[in-house]
Length: 266
Image (cartoon, rainbow, N blue to C red; front, side):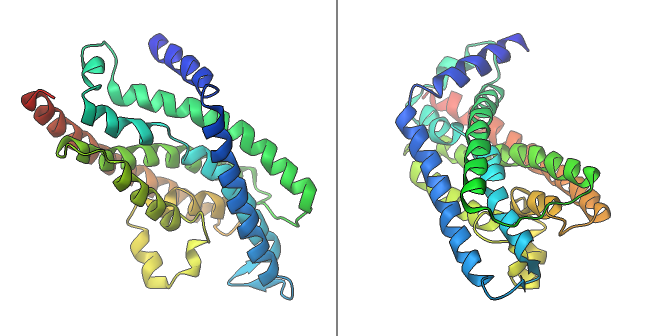
């Protein structure tokens, strides 16, 4: 564990090396939240309820997207792993006494910590700037379940993105373009643009069998009281079951990919 703690510390410090990239990433998140805020503020300007949400719940949803997205979807591994497979840099890790995926998971968590610190500051700044009426669940257990699901969601995000990046084992081309499309697709289906229960019921039912709504939508739905404690508990168990299935699937793909990687001698 000590070696991963060293990786965590070094990764946290390295986040400050590429300051411009980090600032642009944070600016993008804040800009998106502002656009979403003004959209829903306009919708609720003459209504106290719409689409099954009170104005306070929707404003809370919008602002929580900033926090949950910063935690779940900040992952430098998305920009690096595919390239390391394609250019052969992965070789440097295979000869070291450290798990490659665990190494990048540790680096991702360092990035998540830093992004969360900035997201809390941005959340506070925007709250005092616009003074929106927001509503959170008053149940400590519900808050705990919502935050717990956010942690599970971060693991979900890592597993799913690494499964997608593994395509680099079978193609010599960099996977950046593919990952960009997948990440945009995931953001929409995860609920970072709008609450997923605004979709037709049949679509929402289908999405429950995918990992996407567990990443953003369900953690926030629990925190703003759209989901009761019984349903929240069921969602937690469903997410753990799906996480185990997708983890097993991802490990199988990576083991097969590594065999091809070693056989080709990249």
